[in-house]
Image (cartoon, rainbow, N blue to C red; front, side, top):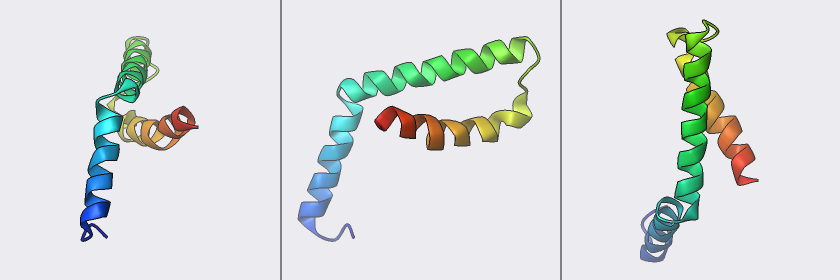
Length: 69
């Protein structure tokens, strides 16, 4: 798939735009928000380290999807 030079250049451009534009700031704010919520839940004993995998999966597959829609 990445053998064509056009595809590689287009892929790099998409990654560059995603990480160095307004999207990066929005993604960062979303991740910070999730970290704060998880920390607060941890402080009141509603979250523990055994939920880490679930939290990561939830963030990747649900929150990012909702964010991009």
